[in-house]
Image (cartoon, rainbow, N blue to C red; front, side):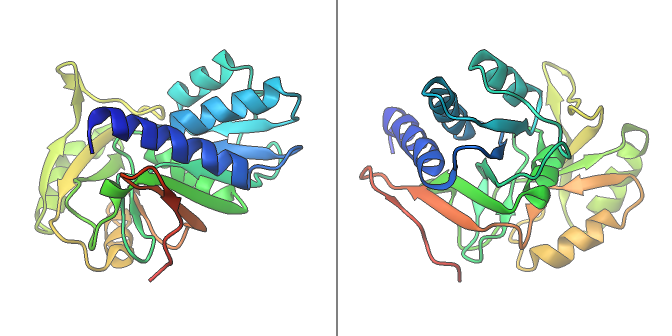
Length: 229
């Protein structure tokens, strides 16, 4: 898919998710990233049309985009979240995900857990037979970062400390992120449990058992909802 077609696909699927799953009068969760951007854009249009919507943002960048579009913001527990809409870095046939490429994995998972339903939007290149080609983000307390690099490497992964502009990346929560190359992840639930048991791990980018719907934009311009395996 060319760059232009990829952008149009992201725009189409982001807007479709809002049109199909967002109801007037509700609080929604809005994700972070290049596909979620277009859901935010559509929510802003709905509010300009007179809809009464509030949003819980999953990160500082999403919060900024919402403010620019006049979307009223709420904290996580201010009111029930009817639906959360977010992208993914990889989507497996059973709808397990790898997320966190943008560094907002902790808040993305918090919002997905709190929402009544969680709709994932993606282009077809994000669909994979098995998770793991995309390095798994693991958010960690900075004090324990070097220790956790060793511990996760002992599990068989190649691990690197994420950087931005030559300095360690800092999440919205003040934490570091380790990008972990495990190869094919055949049991994401067990790996998530194993990693979260390590002292200093805050969360992982494995989202297992959270997805309610998946909307996929195909290269021919159509959007479909794949069945869950």
